[in-house]
Image (cartoon, rainbow, N blue to C red):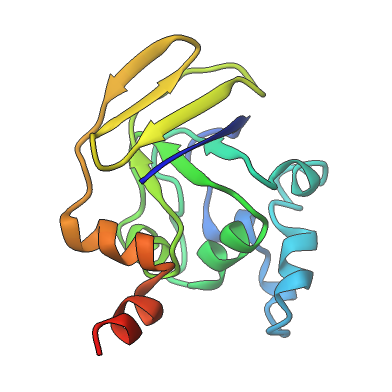
Length: 156
């Protein structure tokens, strides 16, 4: 799986409440989530997310186990999230909803082009290519299918 997008940079320890505040979870309308994604971190981020790659600090997705955080990011059009580490349950939720995650301590400038290949195991920004530990073949298959539900539907 290869893709690219401009970097949207956020800091470390971004918890699921900063991704999508609990006050917006009374609805299952994903367009509401997209409108308010990262609102409590930076209200100007939501319009920048379509087609972007989020580049974050360590421990992205910490906090609650709510799957809605990964869904909100994916529905906002984010191509992938790059961070040195992810909260374990967020990592699994993201893969399950078809949101690629890349474990890498990537330093780059806001808006720079981030390119990656999950099959070959690399991510590149500002002319520097970094090797990453490739996702397992099953995780790559889940992402390629668009998430766990579609993956299992295709297994029939």
